[in-house]
Length: 444
Image (cartoon, rainbow, N blue to C red; front, side, top):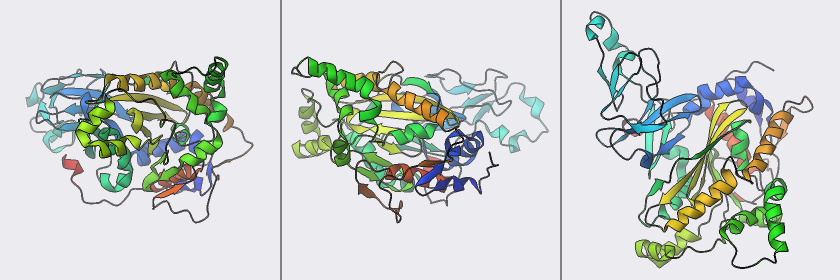
């Protein structure tokens, strides 16, 4: 394996092909943690997870442990989860309420919920030292910049870099559609996420979200079996929600081609431009009435008729707006990814809508799911197969065009691999620092 540096690692991305080391090399992963995941905007959590002053929850951005906390002024802050004294993690519980301050469990240094140093036991012991002038003497360090977009909290670890607005651009329309599906215009997290570990590189999961040539193949053993049994029963009506969810995974290639794929700059994109596997679910009684009361019939219909399939927000989350879901693919190593699958409650919508989303999450994304494990089997086979010396390069050439421009929005055939190429283009771009754009994120 060659020695990779920030200067030569981008050579691993070459138009319609990428080198296998992108998935297998610990050195490439180390460079990603040092550069890529610092330069882009990464998902942290939802503000409904910390609704009250002092509420916090712990998570991580790649290898960085962080805390999302609601400060005394009502604003959300994102702090590195370590004491500036000896480095001890301040919070080890998944979530809780810390009151007005954090207290280190090792030496009892305490900090306000915005990270500022509050008190040190035996403070006189630092008289005559330069502690106050050091970074350690200022308190818990905040991440470089934070932005709360319609309840979804994102952070950029780097102190300077691309602004939130420039990074996401028009791709935020998928989050808009998800939130607009709530009659009251806001979402709330509906319980803890489903979480389980995948023995594969994080990029495999992200690519799979817009890979429309695999469902009818990889999911034949699960969705295919369910459809076969239902056919043998004579396709009785009404179809239960479980069949409405699982049967579309066996749609033919021409269905997925017709769905279309839209790509945006900086690695973002979505499947399901002209409808999706979610388009033909039964209506939920009372839901359209609630939406009509909130938006008017025409606007309500326009919001609900937008049935995007999977929206990938580069580098590592997927949003499924029609079901109010978000999946976070947290890189843990070159061959290790923690997956968190969240369900959100559209405030003001019938409970049956959340129940259907939770059913989908259990059937498709859970550690006990019958569909998600088809994908997991493919990821782990690919992770093992890429260790083979047979070929060095991975092909992403389907519907490739020599003059592809990833700096513009594009809509193409629903089975193109353009979105994968878009992601790799963004990967190479953000492995180097990006010019700063004036913004107020750092102060939010």
